[in-house]
Image 1 (tube, rainbow, N blue to C red):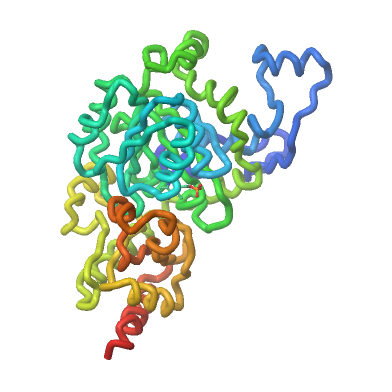
Image 2 (image 1 turned 60 degrees about the vertical axis):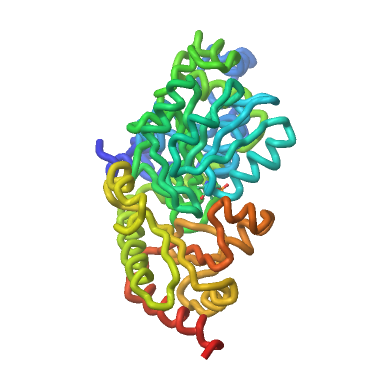
Length: 416
Ligand SMILES: *Cc1c(COP(=O)(O)O)cnc(C)c1O
């Protein structure tokens, strides 16, 4: 089945008992067995079955199956948030003394997890310019255990050369982790460009309506766990082969960290997935129109949208995402005061910390998501004080444009 069909039918063929066509919400903590032996067998892995929702849940299983099919992977673990997905993957791979290479200009929470939280446990992170592929190769040493990228860096909007960087991780025999939150499987399946593990914040475009936090980890099947530098996962590969990494997470890291998906949230993600194709098409269309409108606006200083022909990443957007560049863009209004006045003046767009909602959203990244970083650090992460970030919604474009038009006028009013 093609992507649009998988998003609606993947991983669930209807409930065999009731005939329900929507995935039932299994709002339960645990699962009862008739005999002590049966439960013991499930615990020991001798028989399949659910034990406890922190480890697995049938509603969440349906979401995991659908995401596996959409990403063309071999398995998936859904998590309580995008951060839980990233934390589980990275903690499943590194030990104290190890190093991570990540693209600079990625999601601030991920940078904070790597530098602040994992830094406390003796993990070192090297941030590398996402646009400069050679820098990734240079940063690798014998302590490096993974490279982490975003398909489109949020908020720097860099599009890394995933296939070339996959060549680098391949030679170093370490996995390449790609955060596909901004692009979703509708614009790219990172597996096809040799990424090893895909992570998502499903809170964004997959949920699509700003109603639930969630995340996901998909093993693409590209990495050979039997021959990597991860001794504990290697041992598991002897029993479950390519599923070794997911088994290592499910039975240890994910289980112990407790970042499981809530059944209700898994339901909301499944529902979001059903309309993802239509929404992504409109998000991309509206974002491209808005980027062009802002680029031609005399009062707008700069626009950063990789889908613009003037972007240095445009050819990569064509190569990796078929020419569409998702719904996120940033632009500059001269200084922080004007950025604030613009945000105070929009009427349709909401000022909040999220993206990928059906509604158009705006935020001032420097004073919000990145407020804990110094201005110098922010600069390295691609955040400037004049920057407004926009998650372009799926409203009628003319209404978005009018809203921006009047708010840009107001941003400059006091200067007259
Ligand atoms: C939001 C986001 C995350 C974190 O996801 P949560 O669901 O908020 O925990 C990670 N990566 C990217 C690219 C994001 O936009």
